[in-house]
Image (spheres, rainbow, N blue to C red):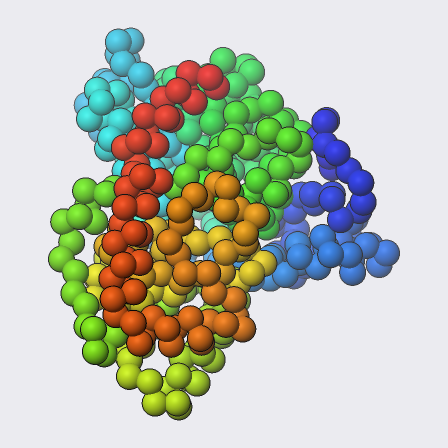
Length: 407
């Protein structure tokens, strides 16, 4: 399904929308999807789509949900704030990531009414103001019907329409079809912003949905610009972090016996096998260092591990060619970082000090950093300054207000 204005030259330029439930039920492309067509399934686009799907999907997620989860509504004071006409009212919706909470807190300090809503608490980081406890992917009909009734009686559904700006992080408001996102803008005349982070575009292809085509859209990583359906669909706005928070963290280092850390939650996407191979070879060759695999641990523990590391290895996957939150937060702590970077994104990341490593030369780059503590220190210092200029959430927050006005 293509959007008006898209320029298509070959079948590999087509962006394929994925119906998440159907793909999970069929463990791959369902009948009728282009990637299930024998003539197309071996094209580069379909191979990439299927690979991304297989690396991102969580099968049988219903087995892992919290059955005791319940609906949470706004407090009486928060509900009263929604009736005020002298304040900008902003609702952050979606994945429950920490960035939503930081934006909310900063916007509240600016004198605005700002809240965070999540659909469920499964795999969320907390700090939300409203939980609908509704998901067709994570709960059965019984739970969802109870939640619909609860959200109706406690006023959540009514309160959802009292905001001025809807900042949707990822892809969902209420309906799996995403049509309600368009209704917010065109029927209820609200300001709507879609904020893409990764899987919604790379894997599921939600940006291909026609009724989202005229809604303002931003992305936090320059590689997502490659997934635009038409030129100018996305505006790149760098991912932001709270610089002050990281400045308050005490860090340590070891010149003689450096700690190399690799943070991952998905081995295939992050290239963890490449990292482990390089580390194993370095150990066999007698290089002096320590290694920490930070695999699916709580966020607070991850940050503590950044702080005591000397070298932090991020994505070693040329398919993506970018650095991620791991590098941003580690650089904020003055650590030397490694990732596979695609030169075509250099114009978006001027002065980026991340050490560019491919799976083939990762070992050599690590040897250089192990043997040169002064270089680690120099790169770490440059990284800290780079993050201050590029990823300071206070600067990005100010830009968001301009974008809200234009929505």
